[in-house]
Amino acid sequence: MYTKEEKEVMKNLVLCIRNFRNENNHSQNVFSEKINYQREHIAKVETGRRNLTLKYIIRTCIAYKISIKDLFKDV
Image (cartoon, rainbow, N blue to C red; front, side, top):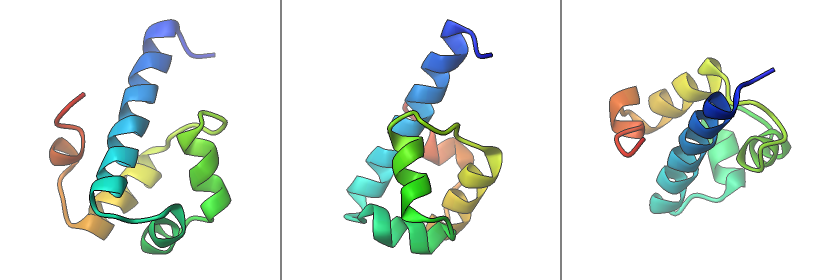
């Protein structure tokens, strides 16, 4: 079980990824192809029904050729 603080950090990380995806004008479908996850999985992560994983973060950084630091600069 996650603490309130952990849930808040997770929510902020997911928002950073979604904002980055939107800044690049990528739909969930395009993003899913880039990181090799099903679109349904991405929708669940973005709505808080699935937890964000390190693998998800790593694939996002690799797909967009950015560092984790750059991805989460606003957290």
